[in-house]
Amino acid sequence: MATAIFEVHKAVFERQALAWAQQFDQVCFLQSNGYSDTYSSIESILAVGATAVFENNTADTFQALENFKSKHPHHWMFGFFGYDLKNEIEDLSTSFPNPLGFPDTYFFIPQTILKFSAQSVEIISADPTRIFSQIMATELEEQEHPFEGEVVSRMSKEEYINAFEQLKAHIQRGDIYEVNLCQEFYAQPAHIHPLQTYVKLNQVSPTPFSTFFKIKDKYILSASPERFLAKRGESLISQPIKGTAPRGRTAEEDRKIQETLRNNPKEIAENVMIVDLVRNDMTRSAHPGTVAAERKLEIKSYRQVHQLVSTITCQKNNQISDIEAIKNIFPPGSMTGAPKISAMQLCDRYEHSRRGVYSGTVGYFAPNGDFDFNVIIRTILYNDTKQYLSFHTGGAITVDAVADDEYRECLLKAKAMLETLGTKLQEVAKTK
Image 1 (cartoon, helix red, strand yellow):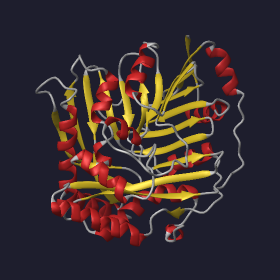
Image 2 (cartoon, one colour; image 1 turned 60 degrees about the vertical axis):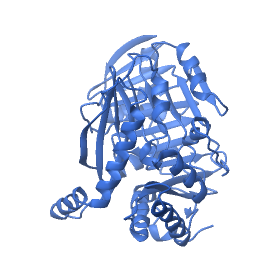
Image 3 (spheres, one colour; image 1 turned 90 degrees about the vertical axis):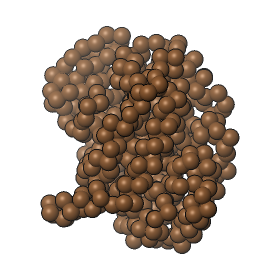
Image 4 (tube, helix red, strand yellow; image 1 turned 180 degrees about the horizontal axis):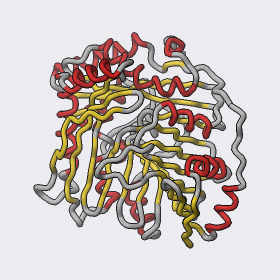
C-alpha cells in the first residue's frame, strides 16, 4: 500500500469521494462534523472495497473475529456488531424476524482509505494518484431523489403505553430498576437514494459519530451522538448518554431547557444508573482500581437535542484483547437497562421488533491499536433489494417515568429521521 497527500477543497472533494465510492460493495464513511473532545482522533475517514471480509451469524463470533483480526495485523478494519449478539454473549434469544437482512457482525479490510483534513486528503491505496484522478473526475448528481413510501409505527401509542406500564410494574416489583423500551418505525415498500438520504440526515442532524456504511444492498445511515467504547493507547473510554431534551426556539429558551435537564431528578437518576452499569462492565477489562467516572452529567448540545453525557475510563488489562474488551461491555448499557440481562430479557418480551443493527455499534480498529465505536441510534437502516426501511427510537423507563413523556421523547428522537425523509410526525400515528 502506498500513501500520498493531495490538496483539495474538502467539502467538494468529500462529496465526490462518497459518490465515487458507491461503485464498491463495501463502504464506510465516518465523520465528526467538527465536534471534538479529549478522545477525538478522526475528523473524517472513508474506507472502500475489501481485500478481506468477516461476516458471521453463528456461534463463537468474537473468537472468530479475533482469528480474522490476527491474520490482518496493523491494518485498518471497519465494521459493526449487531445488538442481537447479546444472544451469544448471554443465554438470550430473539423471536422476531429479520426483515432488513443484516448479519449480526460484519468487518472488512479496505482496499483504499481516504483521511480528510481541512485542506487535504491522505489516500492510502495501491495507486493513490489513480484513485485521486478518478474521484476528481466524478460528477456530482444534482437530481433529487425523494423518499418514496409511507412510514408507519410497529407499535401504536396504546401498545407502547401498555408495554411501558408492564415494564414499570417489573421495576416496582424489583425485577429491574431501569429498562430501555424501543419501538420501530418502518416503510415497505420504500425507496430512497441512500447517499442523498445520508447527506440530508447529516445536514438535519450533524453529530460526532455520523456514519454511512454500505454492504452491497444494505445501508446504515447514522446520526449517532454517542460513543460506545474507544481505546486510546491503553485507556478505554465509554461515554453513555441518558437524558434528552429538545432544543429551544430562542437562546434564552435553550438555556432554560439545559438547566431543566441538568437538574431533572429522573434524567439524573437514569444517567447515574447507566454510569454504574458501565463501570461494572468495564471492570472486567480493566487493571484493578483504574475504572473511574471522570466526568458526570455533562450537557452536550446538538442541532436536534440536548443530551446528558458521562465519561467512564479505565486502563485496559493487557491480558484482555481489544475484541474481548468490546465483548465485556456489549451491548451498550444505555440501550439495555439494569440489571443488564434481566432488562434485555424483558425488552425481548415487550418490544414488537428485532433491533438487529440498531442498539449495536459501528466503528473501526486502527493500525496503531486504537479503536472507536459509536452506539447505533438516530439511524436509518435500509435494504434496497427488499425495499425495507427502518429506524428505531427508545427511552429509559425508571420508577418515576411517565408514559406520555417517554412516548413524546421517542417521537423527539425520531424527528431528524422523519424530517430527512420528508414525513410529518402525525403521519406516523397509525400502525400496520
